[in-house]
Length: 632
Image (cartoon, rainbow, N blue to C red; front, side, top):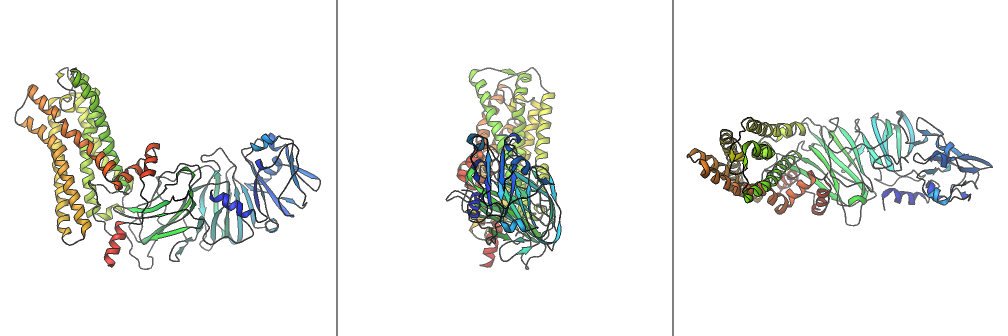
């Protein structure tokens, strides 16, 4: 049962009701309106045909109004109330019951108090309109959305928010009653409320969406904003101001994807946090967190009708929201970033230690996760292209170089790229460990562009050179060392040895750094060093040995069929290297597996696997652990 349904059931005990048109009977039956006179009615029925609405009437005191007329009683989106004073008022139509059941519109029945309240306003979100800011006075705005042409349906976009610091605005799902709202039941507020009695007015509000048929805003004074039907996807966006607040809603029936919001920041101190409330299946949870390099803070909470707040005394690189509740989960998240000193708390996450893991990646750190995905994608292409190579080998078919090279040029691109990406990932660890402030100032897209430009340029140059030097020589095996012209192949193997050697030096340097740190620090540092040793051993015994041997065979003067045979058999080491990341990321490490699935969660199969393997205990962070260990 979703939150809006719960609120509707609750409001049925009061005079106000939101009644779907498909609950009324057809066949000229008199359906008594469930209001307590006097009351007002408002009609929203965007997705229903005008011909149907013209044949449905509200009859009161002997007069009748069609729903088509009531639906169109509006100016700039605001509906004009139709007052009912007849306690026996009813709705009737000549449409059949089946016709009525196909309707999607609603009638909002107000209370007498709302009818007499000049500051009570009802809007129909069927087109674009704006609400003007007000400096004073208490107001209630109810928004009705019956637009089924949006995805998710009944979605509304709120944008161009302008609010004075002396005003207050809170948003709730459902319809307002004459009773006071429950404590912490709002899905959005400004000033923002959080844990530890934190309250802050934030002038900048990010563009956001709500996917509900009815929601309302209560204000003291009032912000100005624009409303329109449609859905605004915040996944992957970057906030537009240093101090800001935004909102995300996952609707019932909407696919439950991982949502990331990157934070605009300048390295200064501040605070950020999340308020969440929702409705999920029993035992399921919503996970919200803030991530910054190796530091992260996450909380997993079951859905409650009151919000669960948390905050941290620093500004991270990105927020992430997800749940394991599947399509039926419904939850609301308000996130905020407040720049400036907060109660003399530390202002930035502590310098992270090297992330634990068998390879140089940082689970939860968006830049490193994308590098890892780029590497895995390269390995997938490399493994796939080994299949036709094996087919040619078993059948004994030999190709000319100008036939072989075009067929494996994509393979050669990715085999070149993956070697440089491994180097970039190792360099990524160095930046995390020794230049943590760098992550706090550079945008994710700039960082990834810089990291991936070198692999692309290197791979493209090798492939272009290979095309330029093709000839009609028959090659024994159609693989990269032989498919490339000998001069190009020699450069490729030699340059790879240099790249691999640099990677090896960086690996060893990291081990030495953590070896000396490990004498002073706790067991987690020793575990990091142990895993680095395993990574280096694997790297040396597979990829490094394979490429070094290929270069040595050329250096010692092997040639002809013997050279071709020896170089082709080095594929054993290369295949093991390609499989390393599958073994580590997908099979052996739950942390890296979850990070991998999260990065690829836009693919349906990865989204379902992410939900299966998602960790449920997430109130942890490297920065948090560092603070706890310092306190002890």
